[in-house]
Image 1 (cartoon, rainbow, N blue to C red):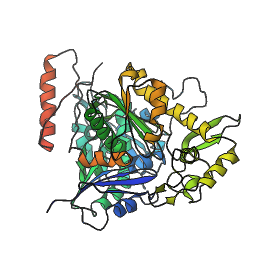
Image 2 (image 1 turned 60 degrees about the vertical axis):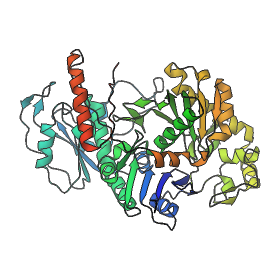
Image 3 (image 1 turned 135 degrees about the horizontal axis):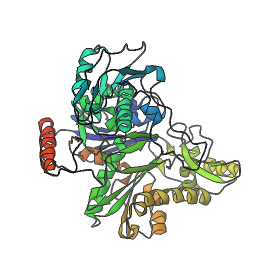
Image 4 (image 1 turned 90 degrees about the horizontal axis):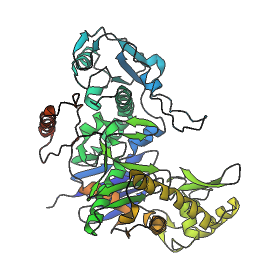
Length: 492
């Protein structure tokens, strides 16, 4: 008997499932309990392998629903996560602020002891600080722990075992203190909500795997301990499948264009491989972990159209999501969305039925646009312009001529808007793969098991060390997961 394998992608509006027998399920997401939609997508048949792409980590960060974290760092370093770097979110906007740090000032604790810039001990580690009452997780980030993890590991042994501890030497062992500290804090902040959710997945299948931001599947226990690796979990599956579709169509150079209900994700593909990134920004926080170089904007089928105080039309980033959803869903939504505009414009046939929703309400969608005083064409033009800019960000702004690229359109709304975007940039072709509406779930189902490990290389001028450093890194990966090992250097 053939094992039943299922790939499930939980989005902001729909949860998609694709099985290895070709069957497909698409149902509305359950934002208050995402695991409920996952369980419902499995059906009655038992599942041997569940491969899952999740938005739980991203949503917990964006909505600030993580744990109370205490940060332990060296004396004089407690404010690194607040000082940050000199660049500002918007250079000429005096009202733009950095995101509020995830650790309160009173929960940032300092400890004596110091390593030098080569990882050698200068002063021995001091006595661990007292952890404040109410702490749910601990982040440890000591100077130069990327070169020598001894102090962090010793501190972990001294701490009480009742709380989960995230060490920077485990989570993000790369130089740059600000990024390493923030990434470690993020990991500690996300562990409780992700652990609760992921533990439920383990009850749904004999083997449960989770997609990472780098586009590979990892076991539940790894993702539970490293939830910061899941911040681009769902979109990564779509990029993998989109790149494969582009190669199959004869276009190894392309841009994947995934327009869902809440957001649009684009990624450059060159030579058939998605562009990698050593660091991404999520909700304004730097995440120093390997990932696919996915650019995300708040533009999807559920993006809400509204007028600013000057009367100018804006679409998104606020979304109607799955509940109440677009006006045409008939679930209580009152503000017009992109899906409503597509329906009124005739891009979605009035007789079409959506999973779990039935026939959309054309009259309600038209009335909502009239109340706002805009046309369907206006809403579509505005959202298309935003998505053109997103594609430019991963092509033109990277020095890549878009006229040589194909646009791979998928997600619930991608094929509806792809031709206008490709025309605006004079792109070579538009590719709409089979099962485009559930392509991310298909990509998750077929993704490889993959482990991404990184290490700082502190002597870049001594090239004789590079080969040995890469071999050591490859051996580290091979000890955790068997299979082909690929090494690379992130340099400039």
